[in-house]
Length: 312
Image (cartoon, rainbow, N blue to C red; front, side):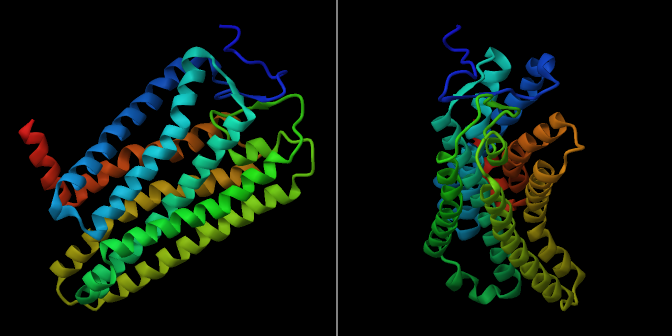
């Protein structure tokens, strides 16, 4: 067991401390962590299975929902298993290579998540404002290409963050007060000049996320303008209902991201365990609720899922 409990004196090892100040409650905290993760896995894999099996669901909107599910599974899996090892077995050690790899997948998944939400907003804009051209503009092949572009954008942005940290010298006290290797948490352990690293991470993240949010806001402003021109209240309600799920998912995703990004750099007065819990919820809550929201609010998907459940 001593060999597994790595110490900070080992030169190639970091120590993830979990949630500082709440060490005595780690076992209890692990219960909602594991429940969120398991429920999210079940929901997301159910969505992937049903969409994959049902030919009628092979449409752009459902392909985007599948991309979102895959991203949620990937980011949550990059975080939760290691966090549970800390909570249950006190296995806090993680190699430098493992830490940077985890950081890469976590932040790449976060950027990919934002790109998918932006594409979903464009999908809703076309469906409401230009329905006659929807099928010709947004084909399945084009959605796949947009997904690949979003993934490549995330890799191109996050990879330099990782490479910049590889060249940094790290101090002897390699303790990360977190449940996973967040970029700024790793940057703060360096003994070298990290000014560029911190600025690149902050400015780059807000440029990428800011661009996505700007395009989402533009899409919804055009949607609202188009809806207001419709005289029928029933048509109003139907058009807005198609956007409800997407709006809920965006609120769950962007609000914690902006909060955690700002508090990591400027929120010195915020209790560390509050920041760390919120940072984890940023990945766990969408992972669990996204398939539930889309399953409930998307009629065609809800019917198909209900069909498979009734068969069982």
